[in-house]
Image (cartoon, rainbow, N blue to C red; front, top):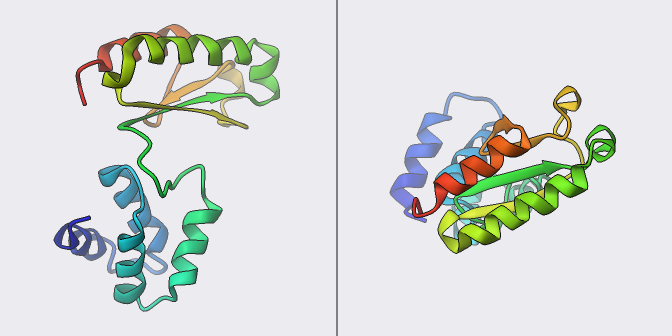
Length: 147
């Protein structure tokens, strides 16, 4: 990661108490992952033990990734309400839509325990936006060639 870019992210959150998570969110959003060199740099700049930075990234593994996942995060809820409303079938259909689009979609598919949107079951979230199954498939088809 470009250290100038990282310095700009740190500066944006400088006034925040306990800014590590906000900084990590920005790095994840801009870079697609939290690289080891970024964690080392944060440790030094924020005067935190490297183990603390690593612990936060590891603990919130559904939010922060140490490996590039793709440009678009696609999450399909597999919680109880979504499971009862064919969440497994929705996961399969979304997976098929991503595979049909190929690597060009830049999508990373993840089955998650709960999105906290039980009234919208079965819930699908793409880049933080809640969609139904058909809306998600349509959004994925439009992502082809965007990367």
